[in-house]
Image (cartoon, rainbow, N blue to C red):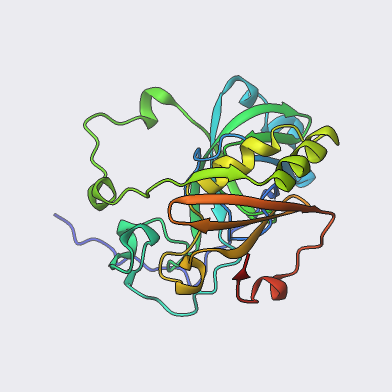
Length: 256
């Protein structure tokens, strides 16, 4: 056989976002760890005009789901770590390529979202697990005949499922949910319940895992506060119109 020519890697690969996701999740805390866990989580993706959405999106509305190739723009990883701590392993380590951690050599994410509809150059999505402002690199239609595998195995994840929380609403929280839903945000109660049911806390963070501390996460412009005791999460209140600031979230949780 003739000798193969050496392969030369390019110094850099150019990636161009095709749009920026507008998600109901404003911060990492509270954002689902996987797609589809919170079916009511809504997002919009407006395709940049330079990618001619009137042509490039033609035919996409016939699909029920789409793959989103995303860039984890909030990843703080500065150096490569071959092993990471998945939350469900409760402090255990696993190889980064056996995980979906955003802390990777290239902070690229793959997410399956339900395509509700296409209007002009905008995709309306649900079941998302991506934060507001996430750059989207590509869209691909979900093909059930080819994207769904037979004889699957889930490795270490099969034996380390997240325990679910029971979710309750305080009297004030129930009134707040009614107010928010009456103002036009239908399904807010279910959205909050589904988000908390999967326990957004970091199991390695002793402050978050302490019983009864007041914690919060933003859904759109609604600041949802809750506490956890045992395996029960209680929604305490919903503050509407608050402005999300990252430095505010750096404050330690306080007793409810």
